[in-house]
Image 1 (cartoon, helix red, strand yellow):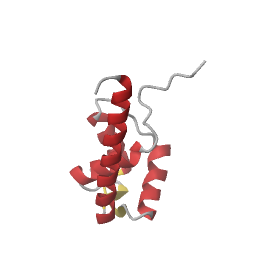
Image 2 (cartoon, helix red, strand yellow; image 1 turned 120 degrees about the horizontal axis):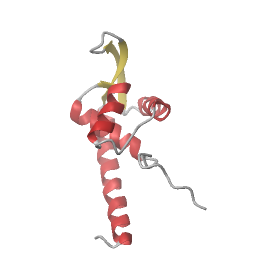
Image 3 (cartoon, helix red, strand yellow; image 1 turned 90 degrees about the vertical axis):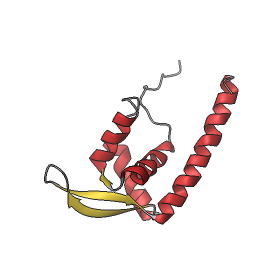
Length: 113
């Protein structure tokens, strides 16, 4: 029997796309705000777990796509705010193009395109 994926599991590889797009449109955000924005922006269809988000942010920072800067949240807590870099904007364009090709291919297989 094939296990059924949970409805809000994010397809591997799309997390960077979601994070970069969020930062590009909303500006610098801390991790918790990112997870909340993705969840609410998807009408609760997507959920990003901290165990996935923070390693992804760390990897994206190492690759120069995002840059972290310490700041204070609305609740007066210290947090690392991530902002998109020029390299991140280039990667976002690449990720959006890849996503468009993927979704077109899937739609064709499903017979909806």
